[in-house]
Image (cartoon, rainbow, N blue to C red):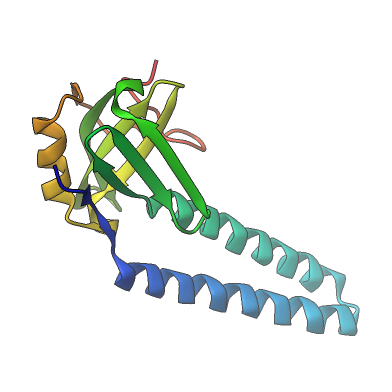
Length: 165
C-alpha cells in the first residue's frame, strides 16, 4: 500500500499567520509606545492584545493538523505546534465523522477524527487540508473501526467528543 496523506491548505495557513503576526506586531508597538508615555491603561490593553494574539495562534495551531499513514503506522503532524506523533493502527480506538459549523451555522466543513487509545483525539478538518476525501475513504476501507457520526458540541475551552470515553 502506498503512503496516503493530507496536504495542509497553505493559502489559509499563510493568510492566518500573516494576520496573527500583524496583530502581534501591532500589539508590541502599542505596548512599547505606551510604556514610554507611562500610560498604564494603554499598557494593560496592549498586554491583553498580546495575550489574545497568543490565544489565536494556539487555536490556529489546533486546526492545522495533517495525517499520513502507511500499512501499520499513522503519523499526525501539527506544523504550528512543531509536533509529530507516530503510532500504530492497533493502538487506535477508531474514527468518527462530524460537521464543524462556522458562524451561525450557514457554513460548515466536514471533518474526521482519529481516536488514540490514550484518550486523545486528533481533529482533521477538511477546510484546512487537501486530499481529505481520499484519506477519509482510505480510513473506511482499512481495518480502523468506524465509530459513527457525532454532533458538533463545542465546550468551554475544548470540544466535547462523543466517543472519547
